[in-house]
Image (tube, rainbow, N blue to C red; front, side, top):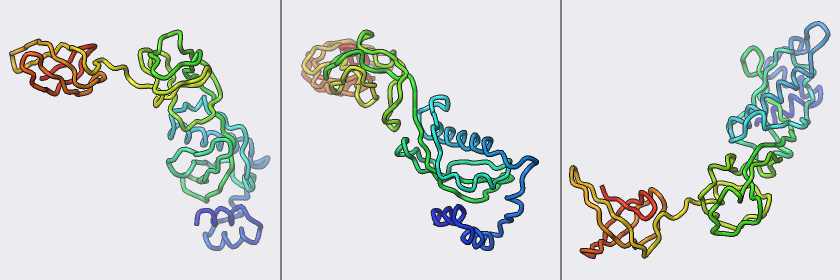
Length: 250
């Protein structure tokens, strides 16, 4: 239904006239303009701003990182008044930034006026962390392994790491090539405890605190719960990883 309405608004004169009658749109008012005619550049700039704001609100990208290179299907824009405002309908991020089809709500006097569909070429250019060289699966990231570079983002729907400090000490879950931007799903936290190693087990009950040795029955990352075996009693316990080679039961 939305597409049908948009086609009628942007279609030939006959369709436009029938739309006016159905919705009671005053074409003399919308055709009227301020002295010198409606300002198309101002409206186009406002439309670009609406697209950038929508993408910034539905993705991790900031407005200054979003470039709207071109907008097509702007038939009828010159008929709008200078006061027209725009917003992208819905709250979903575009699925294809290079040639994205967007539903635009046209508002007059802070009220919905009509809908139109536009096609936009949107590019994202941002600073992201990328591999400084080919890094193999299982590599623990060090400062020399990565660099922060401003690049055009090829797949803007993915979640990229933006600060090199956030990747240091983390472990690659797959091999990455030199120059490849690092995404959150490509990295995991390092193992603090490895299966089979002897760990320090801390037990705390009210005012009682005990420390003893245990054997890890599972590997674990910081904050995870794993099974450990008390070396004195051979009893299996469930403990939380709190540091390198250290677990705790509270």
